[in-house]
Length: 77
Image 1 (cartoon, helix red, strand yellow):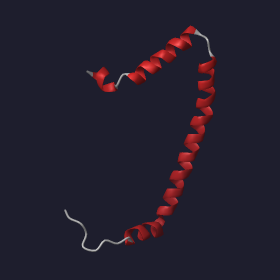
Image 2: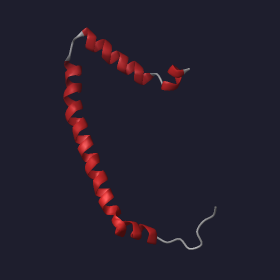
Image 3: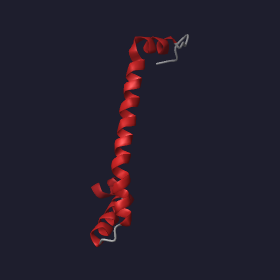
Image 4: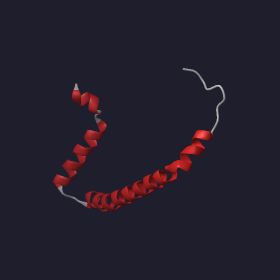
């Protein structure tokens, strides 16, 4: 494999003209909607976890932090 003899940007123009713009807009819409849903669900959940004084919530939060601190490769071995 080697570099092309005469590089050009024609393929990018052809991609945009053949409908790539629609795919790009679809991707942006799905991404924005997903981020909005995640924020709407996670912000109240994190607030309630942070304000809770329950021992069960405290132990659960500690387990989550422990899970983040230990790499998955260490658990597999």
